[in-house]
Image 1 (cartoon, helix red, strand yellow):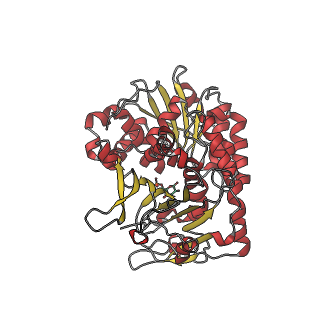
Image 2: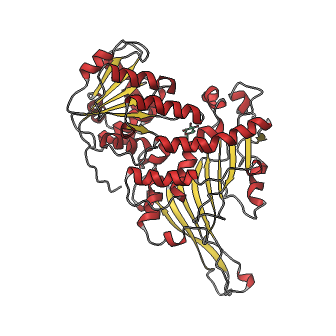
Image 3: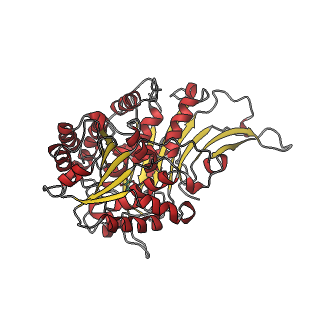
Length: 484
Ligand code: BG6
C-alpha cells in the first residue's frame, strides 16, 4: 500500500487497564504497528497502569507475548518488537485509592503530548479523572480516551459526561467508537465528498432505500454477563450502526474538521423519527449440536435480551423523506459481513422492451471482510440475443486496487490512537452526539420492555429471524444475502 507516514509528536500515553484484554488485543498491537511504520517518534513512551504490582520488565514481557500472538508474523521482526518494548514503562496505580499516583506524576514529562487511555470499566472513569486532577498530573492540554459503553441510557450517559466535564474540557475528551476508525468508514466520506458523481443522486429522489448490515458469526461467548444487560440495541445500534447511518445520511460538512463533521452527524440523529413496534424485529440465537444457545451463553434461561435486531427507520428531513433506512445486526449469523448498501431507484422510464428486464444501480461499501466499494451498473447482456439487461460490478477491492494484502488494512485503533496524539477529534463522538443517540434509543427499549416483548428464536448460521426478512418483503424489497 502506498503510505505516507508523518510521525506524530513525542508523547506519554498512559493506558489505565494496561493489563486488560482491550490493551492486549487492540491498543498495544495498534501502537506496535504504528511504531513499525515509523509513525511513533523515538521519544514516545507507553506507560501501562493497573492495580497489579509488577515491574516494567514483567509488563513488557507480557506485551511481547501479546504481540506474538496477535500481530501476524510477517508484520513483525524480533528487532522491531525489542525496540517497541523499550518504549514501555509500567506503574501500579489504584484507581480508587492514593497508591501510585505521585509516581505517575513524577513520570510524566512536561514537554510531551499527554494522553490517558481509560481502558477500564466506566464506573472507574470518574475516579481516574478526579485523581488525575487531584494529583496535578493532567495538564490543560492532556487528552483522555474513553471506550464504550458510554452509559447504558440517556441518564447514565449524561451523568458520565457531567463527571468527566468536571475535570476535562470537551476538547480533551476522545470518546472512541472504533467503527469510525475503520478504513472503509473513512472511505465512505471520501467517496461521498471527494467525488462529484454521487452527491446529486444522494437523496430521496434517486435513492430507493439504504441497508446497513453488521453481521457476526461469533456468539456472545464469554461476554454473556455484560451482553445480557446490553443486547444488540445498546451494544451495536446505539453506537456503531448509528455512526454508519450518520455518515451515510449527513449533509456535506463545510470542512473535514471535528465540529463541522459532528454537527452534521448530530442533525441526522435528531431528525430520526420515533420507531413503531412493527418496524422492529428482535431475535435470539438457538443452540446447535456444536454451540450453546444465547440463553446458555448468557447463563440466563429467562433472558429477553436480543442478540439480533432489525429496524426500519426514517429520517425526517428534506433529503431523506420517503427513503427508508433498514438496519440489522446480530450474532451467530451466517457469515461475518458488514456493509452499507445504497439501492438506487429504477430509471423513471424504460426505453427497452419489458422482457429486457429492469435493473437498478446498487452501491455497496464493504466494511469487512474484503474492504472495498462496489457499484453495480446495468449493461446489455453480451451476445446476439437481443437487448437483455444485466448487472455487472464496477468493483474496487482495496486489497487489489491498492496492492495491499487484505489483512494489512490498518486496524481501526491505529488510526484513532494516532488521532488522539495529533489532537484531532473528527473521528470521535462528541458528548451531545452520544446523548442524542441515547435519547432516540431509550424510548424504543422502554416500549418493548413495557410490552414484555420476547425476542424470536433464530437458527445459528442463518440470516436472523424470518420476521426480519418480512420487514423488507412487506415493502417489496429484499435484504442482500449475508453469506455465500
Ligand atoms: C463491539 C461490540 O463494540 O464491536 C461487540 O461490543 C462486537 O459485541 C464488536 O462484536 C464488533 O466489532 P468488529 O470490529 O469486529 O466489527
